[in-house]
Image (cartoon, rainbow, N blue to C red; front, side, top):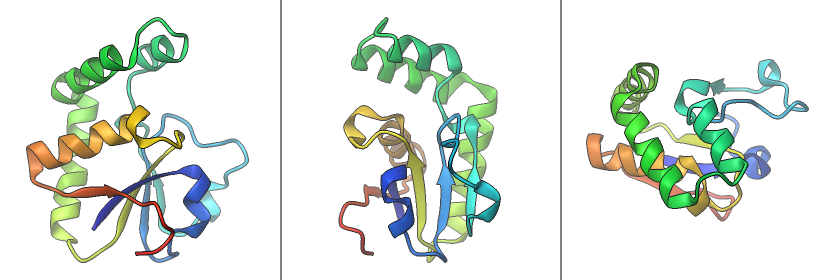
Length: 134
């Protein structure tokens, strides 16, 4: 199963599960090299300019969401990474995979949009991991 979650829940994710960080940057205190089964794919994040516009209040959520959807359809590095991830997920259907980002509220985070894209384009179900158990 594919889940989405945020860094605040990272320590509760089962160790053997694959964790894919979909944020542009990992938190400075996070030791990626020491984290088991954890991978960082900054290509899955919105472009730096889009993220900055949203964080600086230059665009609202609806505009951000539409522009990120456009990036998922048109940005070559993002398309390649999503395609590879979708292929991996389909080949390892019995493995629990977590898409991890910063925002606590999934409805205001690009991981939610990425999960929708995986569902719509690749028929991959994703759900927000909320309770700390699988």
